[in-house]
Length: 278
Ligand code: DGL
Image (cartoon, rainbow, N blue to C red; front, side, top):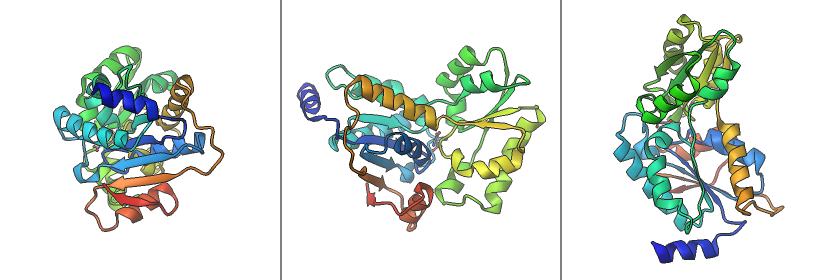
């Protein structure tokens, strides 16, 4: 580990890519914010779609997947890792930091958590809803988040089983996807939530359907932009922000078995994407 660490430090440079990953294609919603804020940064994205969803997996399984992907991205010379997945962050970020975020390794590992703090600040009636995976809602990290930021508001949570799979299939506007969303938003609306947290990085891709289900009066909050800003700050602190003026190089990796994986990734990215097998 020590010699690998020293090697890594010596070859990491401002032009090294940023590695971003998720259980599947959902983290592309975060990648878009990163690319918009840091358009000259080379980006590698891993969609672990063969193992999606992470939501029903144990923390040990998720941690093993995250470390395998991190090893892959570090071998590709990633200068930072973004865990673009709330479920993976809750399950694995501590283990990942213990393994990779050592002073000698010096690779910042950025995670994400449901936006309870901004939602608690934004709500007018004191009732917020959180849509997330079973894994996120059951995690100790989420309990701690509620303890810290949810004390003065009522928090209604809803696990959205099956929704990640719809998005993995690229079914962003399908009738069945809308039905599922309506079913999951109903309890939050019944409790009077005026602010809803999109606590899974897949959900921004069905934001129009969620808006349709909850109406314009309810505010929706997600964390992609905040994660991109935090990443920028960390890279700046480490002197690792790209100074290139060239167009960024973007490569997507997937282990999806779906024939239409490239099509779904390109659909979510918004243009034809370079997609490689993991
Ligand atoms: N995008 C992941 C998240 O933010 C989805 C989790 C899953 O695969 O269940 O939680």
